Image (cartoon, rainbow, N blue to C red; front, side, top):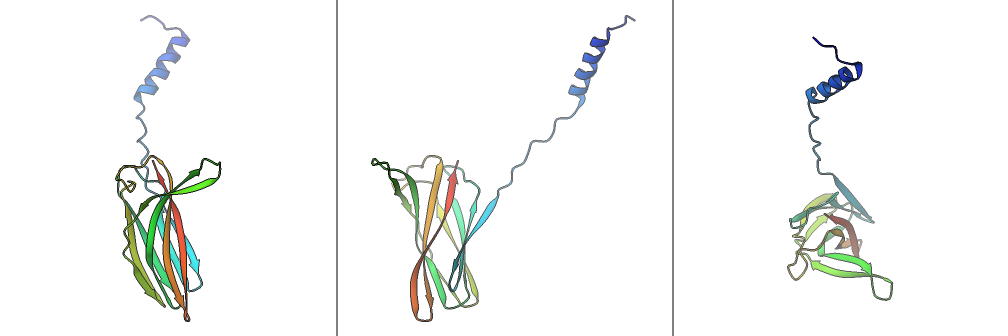
Length: 159
């Protein structure tokens, strides 16, 4: 049997170890969610969003309303906005879509849940481009005879 030079043996060993070793399993990415709380004088609103969403899919955004005193009602209005720079070089926001709402009222000591959905389309039905969009949500806070509108929001990242 002929002897192989040391370099050839090393190359053979490296090749054998590379082909014999199993490949690692592909990474499985799990969806990450974030709860965006907005503290109110009489409770809080919590919007839960994912790290990102796929274009062309329907996004569901859970919203929790927690009242410690009085009542909190909403969402009364919800809209998706796009931001950018206008022709004069100033920041600008453009309405992408108004969302349907199903208002809930949380009374003192209660928690109510609702959801918002968006099909990632604009008001004309066209799928929007990948970008970060602002979700703006309006509520009504009532406490001790005083009523005030409250706005909160979150960023929706579309990829």
